[in-house]
Image 1: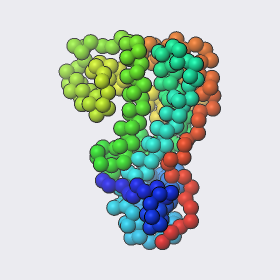
Image 2: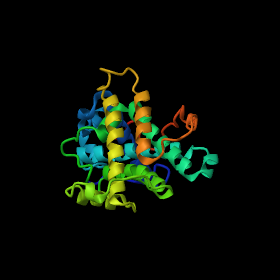
Image 3: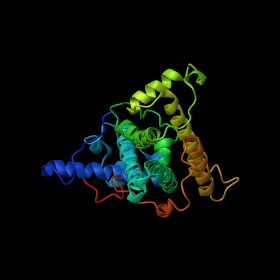
Image 4: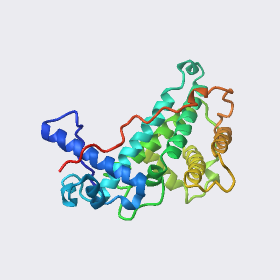
Length: 277
């Protein structure tokens, strides 16, 4: 499903800039409603009411509710990916003398930033990684949500590929994988566009499932029965996964620079500006 105008408010003619600015305002209003009221509030009618315009006026910018949600999701994926990439880029260059250590540190930095962004943005996390919204297709290749989701996967996959290339770690034999699994993993590998053996992609998926599961349980409050602070559990799980992929020997203090993860870069919509008709 198509999204909206891609013209930046700082480029194009006056009409294009006004249109782009209005699109940004619509998405910012939708995000605020998402945070305050949940995914059920993401209707064009609700957004229009907040902006002080009529719902039909918004159809000049979005084809419908689905297109608005998918465009917002695409922006949120970009915001998350920007934060993860910034965290990876913040790893001190001095660590590059040991290529494997440097790659491991960047992968852990991106992973920890995924958690910190998710915990800090529970409503946005729910939109991207929670229950699907009826009628909204995040897997339509023409959807900005699909494009953003692919980028998110590639942030992790590129570092995983770099780590494997630097020093391969133990993976299952192809013969040990369920035959029903192989074509699915091969298809996913092709979608990612990475040159990795199928068993390595399977390990990648397994690691992601473990990380996502723990973060989702924390974000949705399902660890409170046992943990008041889930961050140590997450760090321990990252260390355990590190054993699986050969990066469990990061020296103590190697990631101290992550004590305060870099803020989001602001590509996603934030607070809305003045309403436009």
